[in-house]
Structures are given as C-alpha cells and as structure tokens.
Length: 122
Image (cartoon, rainbow, N blue to C red; front, top):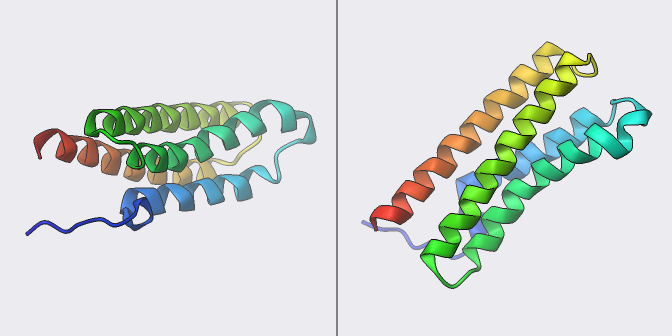
C-alpha cells in the first residue's frame, strides 16, 4: 500500500530537519557575539538550508530534480556537522550539546538517504 503525501510538511524528514534547525538557533544564542557574523551565521544557514531544500525539491516538477535538492540538503547537513565540530574544537559549545545535535543530524541524514533511495526505485 502506498500512501500519498499531500505536502512536504507531512514528511518526517522535513519535520525532524525543522526541529533540528530550531535547536541550532537555540544552541547558538549563547555563542560569543564576535562569532555572530562568522560561525554562528554559517551554522544557522546550514541548519535552515536542510528543511528548505527538502521543501523546495518537493515543489519541483521532476523526481530527478527533487532528488538533487535532497542531495543538496545532505550537503548542508554535513556542513552543519562540520560547523558544530569546529565550534566544539574552539570551545564555544559543550560536548554534550554537540553529541546531542550530531545524533539528530545523523537521524535526518538517514531519512534523507532513505527518501532518495525510495525515489530512485519507484
């Protein structure tokens, strides 16, 4: 049985990506002010890019284009992970916070891979 998705907002991957982006905004509020136009902004942009690309791809006409936007979302997710690891290395975010956020990025990444695979086989 195939379930018809009426909106990208119904996708669990989009919902988790939105929750992750919100958590990134919360986590970066306490980062140093001198990083506001550096690492903070880059981290937030990478985080918001994930659900935005899932949504944009969903709205495109072709399956191949949708898959390409999902791959862009994957790239943004890896960028986000890298920014978090850099923030940890320079001491502006705690290990526990990074570990929690990285677990969530891995979950979103798995769902993205599953959706890309599903779109390839249908």
